Image (cartoon, rainbow, N blue to C red):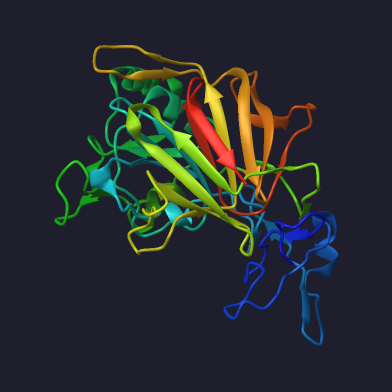
Length: 349
């Protein structure tokens, strides 16, 4: 079934086949209520071509099945997104990706990993205070290469666990195929032992996840998304209704944003979070206010939901529609793109 058609049932790609096999045949997997999975732990039913699988554990960050729960800490890596840094490594394997501006009209990513950490992530760059605040929302180990002056000051007093390449270089390496500073990487094999020595963390579900999704006649269709950042940089997304995925492009639809392994980057859900932003020094460094509330656009299933974000106690940011109801998301990777309030975002069917 096409999740872009009115009234169709859109399955969210949960399970190993993500709804379609390589031939394009419908092989969707449905799961029962999470509360009931333990009693059905080993149940597999087969009826001709239909297979129902009942997993016991789900990722708190993607809503997808995992083999077993873990008390391992999350990590967040600050990844370069200047033109010289592309293609990046590891973005496709992140559970959640944040994108936000730094000085000079370029953006950087904060990529969240948990349990399965890629062997190569990067290029790694320096952090800003608003990135440190996001890492603290997840109690994540932050991996970075330096910071702005205010960033260093916040790291000193915030008690955020972090590995700064300037002082902890053994957790990083540089490649010879690019010029510095766009050639610094880290990976799971570098930090695995360090993570084992950190205090464990049990994580609550980051989002409210759908088991199934419907697209109704009243929903606003948004098959193409255009995000116009300061400095002339533009991000575009194109929705693929067959896969229920958004494909990412840089500046125009002729330039796919690819990972180092040539995989086209995609997202299952996209959030545009508008925040108060100001320039704080002659270099052009920014301050972004992530507390309080503001406007948001949520894209999923080829539609857009106009709503708002709230972070009233400085802990976790949640997202709501204009009726005040918390938005639910499709299981899979979510991109949260944090932009100044004046940023122009457009979308069309």
